[in-house]
Image 1 (cartoon, rainbow, N blue to C red):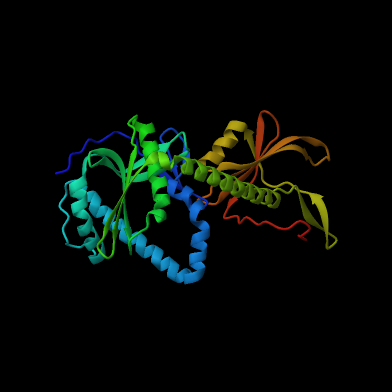
Image 2 (tube, rainbow, N blue to C red):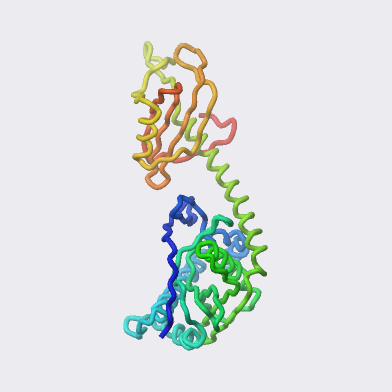
Length: 339
């Protein structure tokens, strides 16, 4: 029987932002997952591999590996929770892999603090979900379970070590308990179990470097999205429309249905639809008499529902919803492109 010494760590939830996984912390933080951050390190290699084998084969291999790993992980979790793990309804390959891993778990792991636990770091601004935190051969450790088709060289595991080191830092922040040792257990399809035991301090500089690279690339991506939002604003905000005059189109000022109210009322309206500001423009806007006045234009947007609202703040007291809708597609055009 395994001994459990559970720690109390508040739960975190996840949210996809631009197809990347982020974690929402109890105190309102939004941090990228450590696996998302680590993707910046292997993007070039994955791209070359996909070109070599083709997208269909690459997708199949990735799905198969993820499925195999998930099944083995669930069996390890059940076993460490002192539940009986039987063959019934277990897929053959994951079951065989777990059987190879079982004696290693039994011989080396005890005093379990947490399994499948959400963690985050206010220092590093990252989050994630760790497989297991327990004593490994009597030493408090971050333990990750991995599966592989064949034996892995130590050099191939660098991202695993960075990931586990991040979990160690997160756990210490959340509990005050330092974890120095990280353990990666790899079980291969030929029945080999590999144990990689490391110290986290060796990989913390690489963790910082990787986070900085991710932040830099993410900020560039957000700037591109800002340009998309500017384009959206340009597409939506128009004060003039064409009218017919003697059968010929003529320019003239027209009024669209506009809702005006206090700042709070307008802001609360956008919040009801789960929208957040994606762009704010301040400066001068021209009214129908041709006079320039101070103004602020805000585009709020809900990424999941694709709803949007275009708001103009006309004065310190009054704001107006100029337009709203959903399903708007962002379009970026080159300078000089004819409308």
